[in-house]
Length: 293
Image 1 (cartoon, one colour):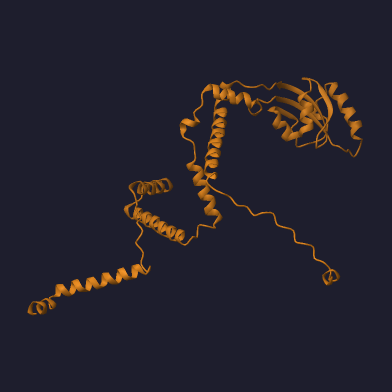
Image 2: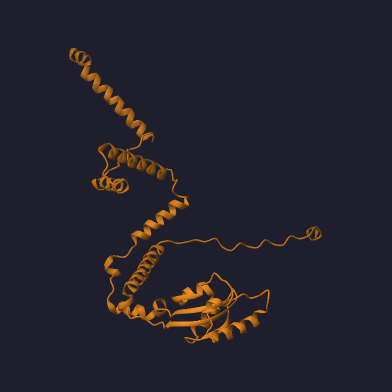
C-alpha cells in the first residue's frame, strides 16, 4: 500500500496518465470521423528544380533562397487546395477541368518516338497518295488594264473595244483604262495569290491564256480587265527530296492521330454508355365530349 501511495505521488506517473488520456481521446474522436490521417505532400528535388527553372526563364536569373521558399509555399498551397477541392468533388462538373484532364490523357497517349520514324518507302507512299497537297502551283506574271463596269461617258462595251484597239496598237497600257487599287503589273505569283486578288473566274481564264498577247475583256468581281501574260511557270508534282520535311511532318501527324484513335478505342471499350431513349409521344388529348363518352 505504501508503494502504491508513493507511486501515485510521482510526477512521471501523472505525465504518463495524462498522455494516455489525451491519446485515448484522440483515438475516440478519430473513430468518430472527426480527425483524419494527414495527407503527405512530398516535394521532390525535381519539382524544386522545375520551379526554379520556370522562375529563371521568366526573370532571366535564378531565384534567391527567399524567392525559392516563396515558390515552394505557393506550390504547397496550390496542392493543398487542389486535394481539398477533389475531396469535395468540385472537379466533377467543371468543363474546364474536364477538358484539361482530357488534354493530359491525350498527351499521355502520344506514340513513342520510334513509332513516328519513317523510311523513304513510307514517305514516298504517303506522297503518292496525297499528290494534290504538295503539288507546286502554276505561277503567272501579267499586266492588266481595268475598266469600270459602268462609265459616266460611254458604255463599258464601247470603251472595251476602244481600249483593245489601243493595246493592239502598242499604246502604253499605263495610260489606258480606269484607276484601280488592283496591281497593274502582277509579279510572278502562284495561282492562289492571283485568285485572292482577282477572284476564281478571272484566275481560271488567265491561267489558260497565251503568253505575250492581250486578251479580254475578262470579268472579275470588280469590273472588266484586259490581260497580257508576261510569264508562266507551269506547276508540277515535286519529288520527295524537294518536300521531304513537309511530307515527314504530315506523315507523323497522321500516325499520331491513328495511334491516339487506337488508344481511345481501347479506353472506350472499357465503358458501357447508356444514352437516353427516344421520348415517347404523348397521347392526343381528347375533347370534353370524348371524355364524357
